[in-house]
Amino acid sequence: MSTAYWCILVAALLPYVWYTAARAGAGRIDNHDPRSGMARLDEGRARRANNAQYNAFEAFAAFAAAVLMAQAAGVDPARIGMLAIAFVVLRVLHGVFYLANIHALRSLCWFAGFAVVVWLMAQAAMHVA
Image 1: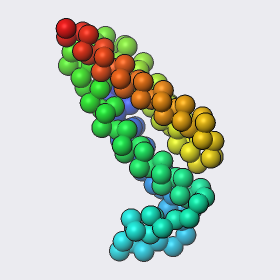
Image 2: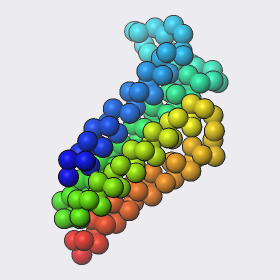
Image 3: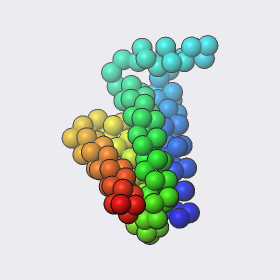
């Protein structure tokens, strides 16, 4: 099960990777109100990195819950680990495609990551039933 837990840790840290990329490309941002400065970013890589950060934060809670649900339900740890790794890889690719402005692949990775979360939750539900 430690693989899935490591994946939760990586997924928890991923938004900060994208935030760092956004700040690096944002120029001067007033540290007294960084959210306001980030929200005013124009189009471009820094703006997309900031959007990737928000999306990574949004996806994290459902993923962490899905892994813990599957574990609590007694789903095979190898299956949980495989799906957790798939989620993390998809979320890394999602951010990379966001920064590169490749919207079709970004959306595909988002959908596939969402499907992994649903799959984990469904496995938990079916295992308990």
